[in-house]
Amino acid sequence: MASINSELETSVGESRHEFECSSTFTKSGFEKKCESPETKVPGKCRKVLVRIKEKLLLMKKNVEDRWAQLRLQLQHSCGPGSERTKIYQIWPGKNVFFFGGRLICGPDPRGLLLTTSSIILSSWIFAVVGNMIFVSTMDPGIIPRNEQACLDEVGTRKKSVKINGVELKLKFCRICKIFRPPRSCHCAVCDNCVEKFDHHCPWIGQCIGLRNYRFYLMFMTSALCFCIYIFAFCCRRIHRKLQHGGIGLLGVLKNCPETLALASFLFACTGFLGGLLSFHIYLIVINQTAYENFRQRYSGSRINPFDKGLLGNVKEALFPPLQASRVDFRADVV
Picture (cartoon, rainbow, N blue to C red):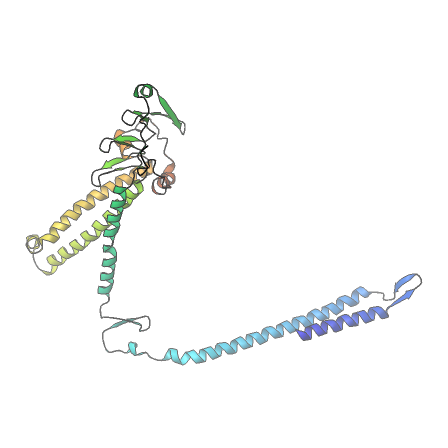
């Protein structure tokens, strides 16, 4: 680069000298005696650009040669080591090696994979129990009561709201003394008005409503996966007994009755949970609650004003923001 700068300075000095020699100062001002200075200066610039290009090409060639030398040195240093035979490659035992001999397994690593997957899949029971506790202990969406309202005054009024152009009448709850919001219902078991009431689940002893519906779906999904997993292993054991033991179904019932009983129980649980989960998937797609579907609220010509299309319904059911509880049960009584 220093040589290029010196050449540029020399060329500029020569051009300046020729310009000064070809110009004179007279009384009328500055006169140029050079007839065509435009043709000389571009010529000098062209020569400078050619020299710069040659220097850059030379530098590129030097870099490429240096890189080729370094690559040959690396190949020479790593080549002999990579061609050497490792001890694990000629080991006379029946072990199976992974990652270049760093992991040593027995002759049949499938047992390790099966045990690892069994432990991981068995941890589903914690997900099932966790979801069940979470669903059964959270506020499903209880609506606060209006203890100060006068029953005679409020009961005679009528209210209605419009949702997407469809007018819906609000029903008055004489127990909670409120006009229930749309899609709400008073649960006779819990004795509460629940927002977006779906049903009261007797298996967990809690209402399913606006705030815990998606967690209820997670509970059913995890329980169904766990039942299918255990049922598959029960069927595998029964199949082995029938195939290798040479005994019939009565022999299996005599030798391992617990496996057959567990398989029968899990078969019933799988069918029940699968049917229930399929029904709720159908309800999500059409954006209805189980209570609305049971009462046939939108059958016939009645339009469902809450239907937002397939993607909108799925998003509303599975990915809604978790709303805060409308009742502060830990507040002090005034």
